[in-house]
Image (cartoon, rainbow, N blue to C red; front, side, top):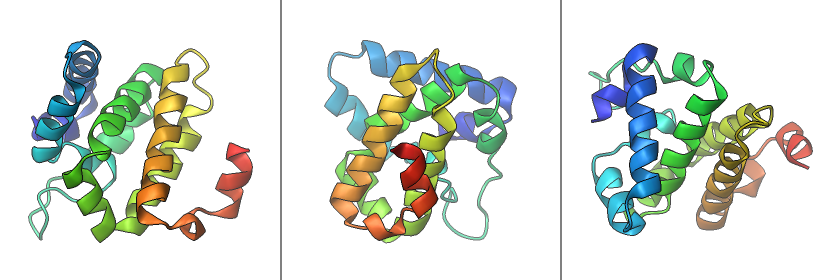
Length: 149
């Protein structure tokens, strides 16, 4: 599953869309979130290397994220589902700075997506979850805070 998320855009776009639909339709979101977090699906979404170590796979997620508002929405909603889990927060606590940077970048990237307001909501919730659990408001750049306000 994770290699599909980091693969080139023609594959990852479809994989992300399918995962978003699964998140939408699965009646037990907490169970699904734990399962997806256990598979480390959130790691490339936070720009963390996967697998960890010198043999990390090349991620095309940055390119995929620039393609469309629907793709950014899928990424934001998938990350929102998985970050608020024990596994997601444990990894975020080990790498607070890159996680906050990725969350801020995602939020700023979704502001223009007026056709997908759920992406902005999910990205805002992601940043809130990280800030609440990591206690690192000072890691958010001032210009990003100005943009949010």
